[in-house]
Image 1 (cartoon, rainbow, N blue to C red):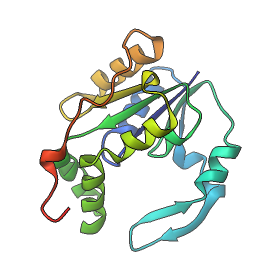
Image 2 (tube, one colour):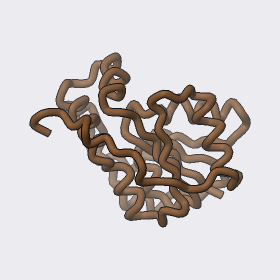
Image 3 (cartoon, rainbow, N blue to C red):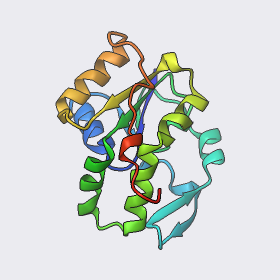
Image 4 (tube, rainbow, N blue to C red):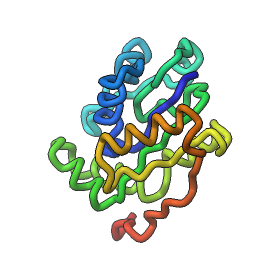
Length: 170
């Protein structure tokens, strides 16, 4: 079974995936798989432009966890969408030295449920877990993901609403 862990940058994907790997799960990071599919590097936005269609088409399904902000585009059996309250997300992104435009773009994307909506366009909601990482520890998040993978925690999505955190001008 392939499980995707996705979310806006700063929601905790890398930290939680590292904990799941520490617990013995096979974890593949998106950054380890997209190199051959990079079309260009957008230096202004500090991001890579990836040929997503080709990457998805050529991705070999695996038994384990795929972590990355595009993981929901893969043919996963289950998908966990990590969420974080936008004001806290802004604080988490600040130490990364991203340009303000990139921080604002990610905060707005989180407030507007962009990753969740993309996930639900690809996967039925009964295979999606939306997990609010705002006040949970990495261990607590990993525990819940393991429960979801084992079928002990039901799918659940659509209950998080960050629209009150939209920034002026968004």
